[in-house]
Image 1: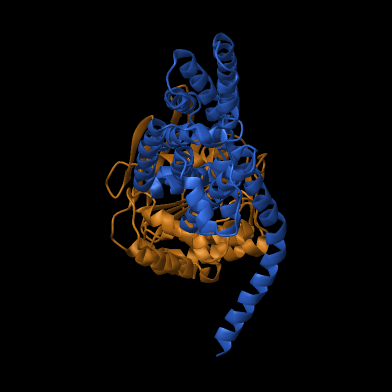
Image 2: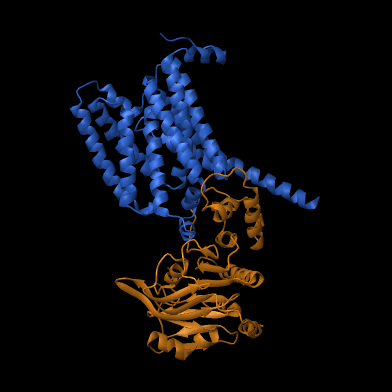
Length: 295
Length: 273
C-alpha cells in the first residue's frame, strides 16, 4: 500500500522511514553516494570512466555467480571487481594504454555472467536487479557490508589523497618526485572496485555511471579546487540518491531511473548554462580586481 | 656581458654539482649514446641540443634516477641520482593539458610541494602561500586562480616552471619548454629561465631543438647526436670541427652578423617531435 505525498516534508520523511526497507535503502544509498562521489572525482580526473564501467561489468559476473551459489550478490561483486581491478592494472602498466586490455577482460566477464544467469534456475528478477539496481530490496547484512566497504574506502582515500591527486594530474612529475605510479594505480583500481561493488546495489551494473562519473563530472565543471570538487560531487550524488529514493517511494517507477534522470538533467544544465554564466563572472572579477588596484 | 659571466663562473672554486664520466646510456639491447663526460657547475644555463631521438630525454631520465646508466658514473652533489630528489625541479615534455582538466594553477604548483606526502592535511595555507610565491617568481601570480585548461602555451610553461621551483631546487631540468611557443614567447621564456638561474643560483638544463634563442644566455652546451655526446661552452662545441667529428660527416657551422649560428650538413635539426 502506497501513501500519498503531502506538502509537509517532515511528515513524508517519517512516513517513508517507518518502513524498514526504506531505512535500509536510505542508509545504503547515503553511504554509496558519499563513496561514489569521492572515488568518482578521481575516476573523472584520471579519465578512467571506461575502467569503472568495465569493473561494474566484471562485477556482474561476480554477482551472477554469487546468486548461483546462493550467497549475497555483493560478496560476488567484491570478489570479482577486486581481482579484476588488480588484473587490469597488472596487464596494462600505464593508465593511458589500457583500453584494449580492459575491453578484453570486460567482454569475457560479461560472457561469464551470461553463463551464470542461464545456469541459475530461479527468478529472472535477480539478473534484472543486478543490471539495474534494487535498493529497495537491500538487507540489513548488505547495509553492514556497504558500511564497512565505505569506511575502508574513505580511510584509504584520506591516506592517499594527495599522492593520488598529484599522480592523476601530473604523472611524469609525480613519478620523478619518487611516487610509485604502479602502486598508486593498483590502489586506485581497488578503490574503484570497492566503490563499484557497493554502488551496483543502488543503480545496478549498467547505470553505474550515474553515481560514479556524472556527479564528479558536474562537480569538476563547477569547482577548480579538487577538495571543493570532491565535496560538490558528494553533494550531487547524495541529492540525486535521496530525491530518487523519495520520489520512488510515491511513484511506481524504479529508483535508478530517477537517480539517472536527476544527474543527467544537472549535467545538461551545467554543461550548457555554465559557459554562458562564466564569462559574466569573469568580467565581474576583472572589474573587482581593477577596482581593488585603483583604491 | 656573456664573457664576463663565464669568467665569473670559471672563477668560482666550488666543485661541479653534476658530473658525468664515460656514461653509456640506453637499454640492455640498445645503446642510445656513449662516451659522455661533463661537469656542470652551480648557476649555469645549459642547453641540451640534438636531433629527434638522439637521447636528450634519456639524459634527463638518468639525472632523475628513472633510468640507470649502462656503464660510467653520474653524480649529483656527489651522489648517485635517485628518484624523488628534492634538489631537482623537473618540467617534462608536455604539449597539452586535457581541456576537461578544470583545476586551478595554484593547486598544481601546491601539489608539487606536498603531493608526495601521505595522509590528510586540513590546513594547506602555508603550502598554498609557498606555491603562490613560486608563481610570483615566474611572474605568473595572476594565473594562480585560473584553470589549467584556460592557459596559453606560454602561460602553461610558466606554471610548469613554478611547479618545478616550488620545492626550491638546485637543479632545473626543462624538457623542450620552447616547443609550441612562437618566437616572442620563446624569447620571453628563455629570459625568464635566465633570470631564475641568476637570481636563485640554480643550474638549469634545457632541452631545445633550436639553439639560437638560447645562445645569448648559455654557459654550456650538451650536444647529443649520432650516439655521441659533446660538451663544453657554445664556443667550444659549436664549431665545424667538433660537430663534424660528432656526426662523422662534414658539418659546417656558420655565424651571422648577430651571432646566430646555422648548422649545415645535417638533416633533421629542426624536426618536431
